[in-house]
Amino acid sequence: MKKDVMILTGAGQIGMAIARRIGFEKKIVIGDKSIENAQTISKIMNDAGFDTIPIEMDLSSRESILSLISEARKYGEISALINAAGVSPSQAPIETILRVDLYGTAVLLEEVGKVIATGGAGVTISSQSGFRMPALTPKQDELLATTPAEELLSLDMLQPENIRDTLHAYQLAKRCNEKRVMAESVKWGTRGARLNDIAPGIIVTPLAIDEFNGIRGDFYKNMFAKCPAGRPGTADEVANVAELLMSPAGAFITGSTILIDGGATASYYYGPLKPQE
Image 1 (cartoon, helix red, strand yellow):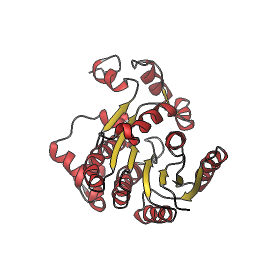
Image 2: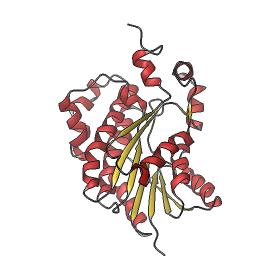
Image 3: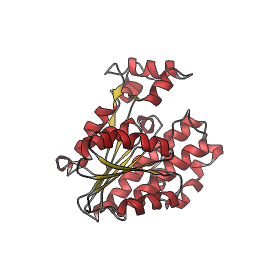
Image 4: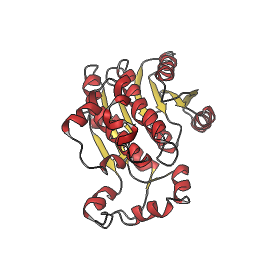
């Protein structure tokens, strides 16, 4: 029997929390570069009554993305996308961050947008990091939003000599995600579908716990200690926002980025997290 299909890319805690919140009665196709991770999340969800299938998928490869979409369409119309895949500044070199988080996300939003069902909705997970950079020029923003995906990595601003370090690359990737969602939401709208972005701050996941205990641990602990909320967030709090964005209650929201960081960005600009000059 055909079902509405949800694609979940990135077999982690945030993606699973969102899928559990809104994935009932759907066939959930879980794609991750690590098939073991996809299988683990798939089993947890299937044991809780969901209908999922794990697939190995590399977000940095258009061919792999197209293969995932083709597999998903075997089960029915694709009505939902949750893109929670990506790498962090401490996980990968500059080239990989740009290839996965920036290029791969652009391709995924583009290709799913070609087949998304009427009434469908998608969310992609970016980061508060996209808000930590100085403003780009209107032209640079437009280039990040609209440059054909296969030409993105050739942009001058994304060349190695113009990128300071992996954190800068990550910030650029997340800024691109936000601008890309705006541009792609216009295309999704022609199919009667919506697309939004969620920019989380520090969310407690196994990866975040590794970061807390790593060389950047004091940086992260200081960040959530000095944000207005005074704590890190949880994957379920991100799922609260995603549930709104993907439900009829959010029917007038598309092309938007929702910042959910406990006020860390506000503190960065106007509070105790503001960098000292």
